[in-house]
Image (cartoon, rainbow, N blue to C red; front, side, top):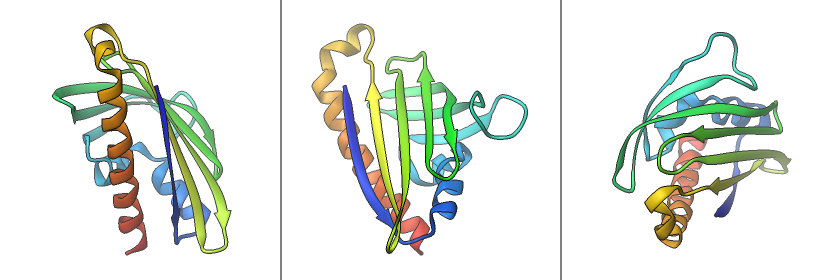
Length: 142
């Protein structure tokens, strides 16, 4: 299952990338993420891992995520492994006349009994991405 959202943020590309590509900021703008802790040593880059406390669609628990792409200031991706809904989120950043165009693409892979609820999950993900992108824009442009 896949979905994507786009938004323009009225800030320079380097500033938007630095904020969005640091998962430690996720609880500030992603409604389903309550806390994040880096679980690997070293600077942020491909292979960096994090533990996220999540609360979404009745699932409350931990998700292990890994940075799978890191190309400042143009691309960033992370993948969640395990749990009932493994996913990959890919962020693409492009300079725009009024700031930065950000595209967020999500690919989800429901497992087990969650497969029967694919359309419900996809609808939830689309709404959550819209809301989270709006929260990000508001936060960064204040």
